[in-house]
Image 1 (cartoon, one colour):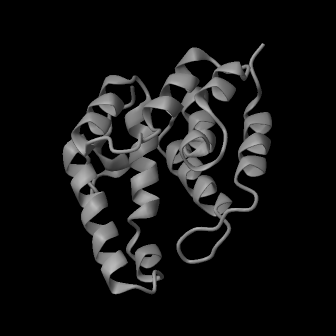
Image 2 (cartoon, helix red, strand yellow; image 1 turned 180 degrees about the horizontal axis):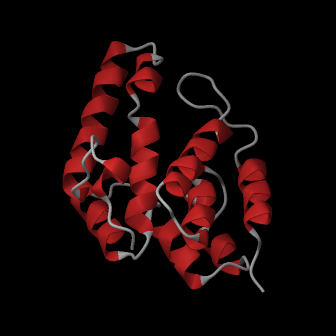
Length: 158
């Protein structure tokens, strides 16, 4: 039996409870936005669970071993790990892993959409950081073949 979506949400909220984003907002707001983006694009339950957990291994002390120990489908676990950027990993390798993992592209598209939201980026105090983030997200969109203006970023449901 796998964890319910509500149980996964509780785990994600716990894992990120003390974190804030670059504007000092509770980090969980980002997770809520990514889940909402996946849901709006008809993402399935595995993708919704992965949306809650997409930054857990990368941005908290939680590990791949911890993730593999959760009662989650292998697909959910694979999506989370595909979205976990590794230290020093080239952007092309990261993008290729996302593209090769069924279900990961939609979650990453929702993640980028929220991270690159002009209103959100404008809230970053430092101009150099705003520029760096804007370029970073545009570059990743290009590597993944995402269209920021298309419904659901042009991602065919998969």
